Amino acid sequence: MKQPIIYDVDRIRDGGSFTTRRVIAIQKGEPIFNMSSSFHKKETGPTHQIDMPDIPGPEKCMSDLEMKKTNDRQGSREV
Image 1: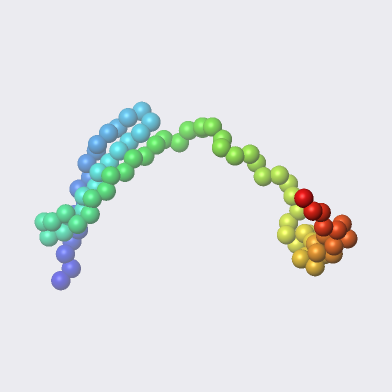
Image 2: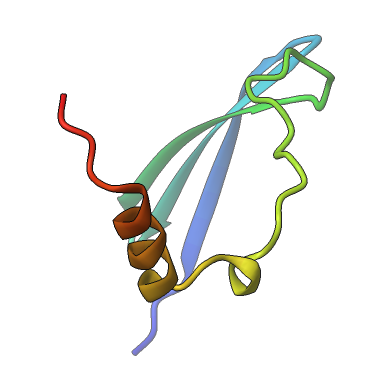
């Protein structure tokens, strides 16, 4: 027989930027799941990477054989 699951949601914090909730799932009178989640309102922030440059796609790149021929013509450089 299937037993219903009751979700008990507690409002932990309602702030200006963050909201926190705790959820407890209860089945047959026993807690079977406990979760605490925080949510942040969407806002602009610092960027952490630069935009990708406009480069040709892979179909326009040299093949392995073409690359080898180019490197062979240039010769190997010893350090």
